[in-house]
Amino acid sequence: MVVLSVPAEVTVILLDIEGTTTPIAFVKDILFPYVKENVEEYLQAHWEEEECQQDVRLLRKQAEEDSHLDGAVPIPAASGNGADDPQWMIQAVVDNVYWQMSLDRKTTALKQLQGHMWRAAFKAGHMKAEFFEDVVPAVRKWREAGMKVYVYSSGSVEAQKLLFGHSTEGDILELVDGHFDTKIGHKVESESYQKIASSIGCSTNNILFLTDVSRGDLPNPGIGRTSPMSPALAEASAAEEAGVHVAVVVRPGNAGLTDDEKTHFSLITSFSELYLPSST
Ligand SMILES: CSCCC(=O)C(=O)COP(=O)(O)O
Ligand SMILES: [Mg+2]
Image (cartoon, rainbow, N blue to C red):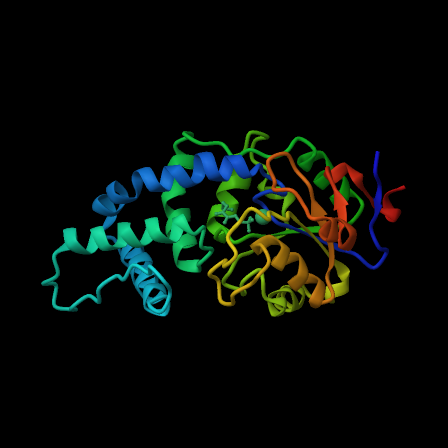
């Protein structure tokens, strides 16, 4: 078995979700289709609720920021006098959500709405989040060895908690010391990792970030800056730029790596391949 020695200065393990703790297939074949299939019905049912209106306001703000992008789908401004036709507005939001999802955008606005939609499905027991089998035993071991374990995903903190709280392994939320999402900054921006370190109260070099690299993804993640790299590779590089240690997790279903990527990044195929000097 390959073993990757964790540097002695590391006290925090920061986990990506999709492609790292959880199969990409679960996200792409279960979570995302649920949103596409139910978004219109969800908006119809919850339109008058404050939470839903907040989601729509955030999506509209994002749509304004996106107006310069090719094929962007606008959400008309609300008149504020209650005279807007809700059906027309709902259709615009549905079209915008479909457009964003077709590009696998990681905007805070889209992720917030998705999280709210998944809540009902998880709480009703209609969905359970899949985790790779090595994840839970390894995280338990790391915590026993004194490591702190945090999650940093583009999925909203609420969605992250739903996944960890309703998993095929049971409720494993207690295994996580804290959660970060794009509200702290996007995953392709190195400042996000500095902010995470400050928020945890450690230095960036005390953190080991485990993430996937999925090259089949879009050339433009649509999240703040255009990157010629895949979104996840940009994540790994942004973390490195901030002084964070990075290991790329190679999982079934993840896209392949180039030779350059294989050479540049430390690779693991299972969390059990991480060797903690302190846990001997
Ligand atoms: C945690 S919610 C479901 C996954 C999701 O929406 C997503 O965008 C995952 O991105 P990640 O940063 O975990 O690769
Ligand atoms: Mg990922």
